[in-house]
Image (cartoon, rainbow, N blue to C red):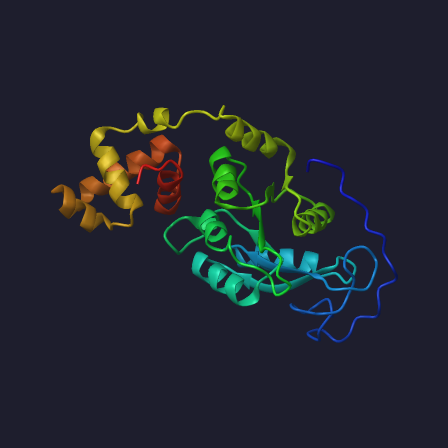
Length: 261
């Protein structure tokens, strides 16, 4: 984090109700509690988006303590579910993983860009905080350029995450220490040029990459280029290896971020 997490004064927590009742630690969507400052008031409404369901549930449990001032309003596990949930719930903060299945292959950046114009029931902006295991520069910049207010890695502690959620809800920007440098360099115009990455690919690999990044199947790409499905598969494997990507979802995001499609 960029600064020492703030201490939120606590008042004695009320006795929890039965699990599953509003405001109890075991429920998602409780309405009572504190606002994180020790005073009674509305909680920060949070939507957790992560394709690893156990991790998402763990984050929800971590943030659901009666003294956190946070209400978990829902969980989502892919791009479409995240966008639908954000539109229907209007959360204050979306905790957003970077690598998500579904949608147009843009992952967390696609969600952040789509929900950027949404507002909460109180009329404040819906704000996104990237929360991912990845600390890769391209992942950080992708979600920030798409509209997220910050980015922290999953090595963050529970106390730090609570503090980060409060800061994002208040309109601050929050980054894990090393990641802030990526953003500063990008806005200063000193980020590494992307043309060198594209130059790693042969002309045919670039053709295949653009089609796959646009959502073509291997068979459709093969038909468009008059080559075999197996040849397309070979080119895609080479492209992923050269660009240090793991799947076509990451490839689609890489291509859109660099405006090559």
